[in-house]
Length: 223
Image 1 (cartoon, helix red, strand yellow):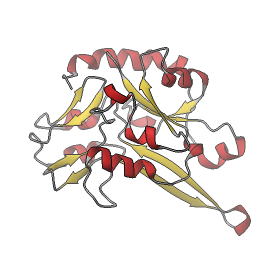
Image 2 (cartoon, rainbow, N blue to C red; image 1 turned 45 degrees about the vertical axis):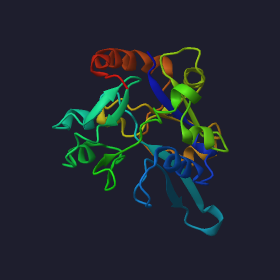
Image 3 (cartoon, one colour; image 1 turned 60 degrees about the horizontal axis):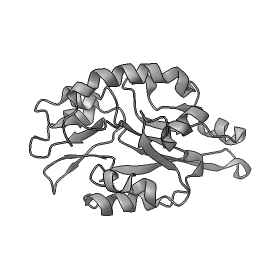
């Protein structure tokens, strides 16, 4: 059984927002700038014109192994499905917003057309046919690498085994499955990685992820 995750070569992001458009089109996401399953964060800096810069950080639901949004949901609307994907059952959602408050990544929003909280689903309706998400397939600079974290032959695993990476808000202990690849350009790395960020290798992190995933698999429902 697959265990889906994504690696982000955020150094390649050009803020074209093709991923956002593809996501809305593929998943019929509600229109509106604040109604996004995926987005690109923008951070500007520099004290003089000569050292001004803009950093882009693609983001979305991290489909955490230990997702607090699932734990806090009072109705079971937020749940795991095959592949370790975190989803929302719209019919069971009462819009209490507990999951929105519990999510460290602010990855959820209320979709008034569905009368429920909505979020990224890793395009689970198309991955079996096309093998990847709409955002990954559309990105012109190949920022996103989507795949099976448990498959040593997948491009995702090979990427994580060959590159260093970091995860966001590691202190929350959610074991997020969005892995940000450490930029190979040293100057860019220093400019875009904040102080205190821990850099990891997959060989060091794999045992922790594998043990936690094994425990959670019993909660995975049929997609």
